[in-house]
Image (cartoon, rainbow, N blue to C red; front, top):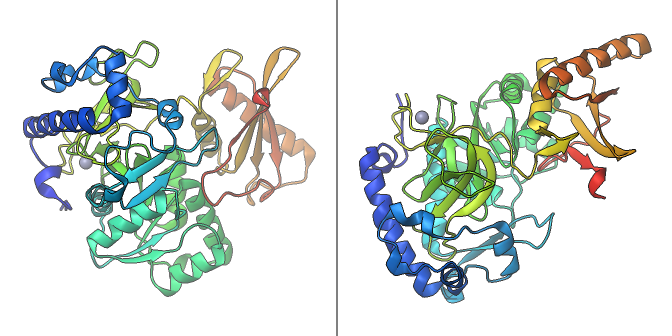
Length: 432
Ligand SMILES: [Zn+2]
């Protein structure tokens, strides 16, 4: 039943993967030591030499790489190949500081695109498919990554980019798109627009691959229903390559990490200590065979768990359970850890859609959380008494989930600005 893009790797016995990782890791450390002065300096500062590294067992001796390290060395951070050998850059959004620029040789692009092709096949893709890519193109890795994976698989690729919803829907129906790829919030918005225009019967979509932001199981069900598809998660980050570092299979119980290219560790985010498999902690990645931008022990700030439980799809790659959110996204409100994804889960569970905004502020030295939520067209009313009752019910459900009081404001459908890329869910006025 299952199909793979590169079965020799995707179903390789764990002991063999480990041996392959070990071999690639030692070669990579020689490359980094010789060709990547930025990281060599970090190693020397930590008192470790390449001669101290004999196997993957020694990886904990190596210093971590943080996003700040990569930003500080802008624009040539961690570059380990002559620029003449590089064929592409991609870049992070730089919303919270300097951009990180990632460099790729042709070999690096091939690895990245093959990882995305594996994700497409895991979502049921074949060369017969029409892949509709509504991620942004350009410096953002979403569009180019899925576009490249779709080419590798031989699919007809529609490089739609984000935005212009009318054109998206026209091409989707006229050209018979079968696999959609974009951010989950944009998929939900497309679902809403399809419903409004009564286009559901004209769609040929069978699957969707959605990533670049955290989304809940409730949101998955909502998107699956609205689009009549199976919705798959995909994970990645520009610093490591882009989407496709890990991807979901039909079991939908976590994302298989492409372990022949990326070595994953889980650490205690406070102490940096490596935790045993199965423990929850911060995910750390080492690029095992990337040439131009071979980032070692990169701290992703994503909090999750790794699992080697056998998967029904036959893939042997370790799975990461859906990250609970980035530690960056975590809000501390009245001393309590709050992930926006927890609030989203409550809203969807109560029959609302993922159209909401959180406003955090500090009034008289005390934190406040306001949740603006759109009423759905079905729930819409202008009866203030009914609205008051609905708000009260949500306050109770949020209190049960978060343990703190949140003030809820129900607003009219379509009154919260829609996003075509990553949604802006949180306004933290404490930081302004
Ligand atoms: Zn699987």
